[in-house]
Image 1: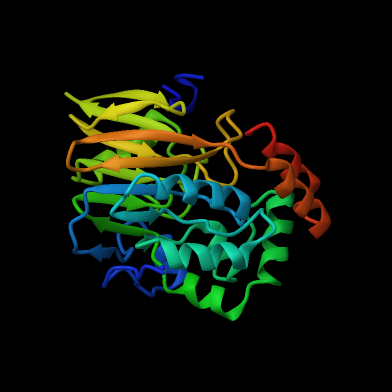
Image 2: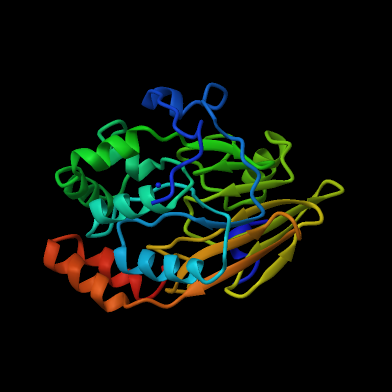
Length: 282
């Protein structure tokens, strides 16, 4: 089964969330350090793949402010693609209680090469690396690609490869379930909002539309979708409200002024394709 096609820190980070490691360690399956978060939270806003899109991030944070959440978790790729990497790093640093590092963040830092990037992504990564402030670099370098918090397992990409692997197939989803024991597993990276369940050895679920709500009765693998570069056909900024006490997850979408981000990308000289696709959510 192809999962993707089955349906069409102001606040400081908790102690222990900052783990330094080499880029080589980040890409191994068994040696990846994991950030640990001790305080218990009930309602969590989960965001991912901001990709330097300040207008989308502002819209999502405004929506989060209306939900009285206890914490904000970010699954990585704060930069890359978009025109405002430093502004987004500053906002995520101020607002996220826990933040992971993603592959685009690592490439922008020069800790991974652009070998696996297409031409547009590579050009955007070079543009970003030339403009990252020392404060942004310091923030990103202090992050890990995986974490554990309040009984949930968090990965930028997957449990098998926290930096690079896309969870867009049943095989990839099963591998992440098999390598974890947490009742809730959170992943980003694919820019596709997903709600998958594991029960009696079967994986069910698929793409999660905005407004979808999921009871957390079985083990769950959830992807909040992308704040700044959605690729599931819905161009609105995506985020996930996770209620660990009432045991439900709510997938949210928020409109934002896409045309402003597109204009800023073109003015900055970023690849036109990256700007154009924002309006299509692909």
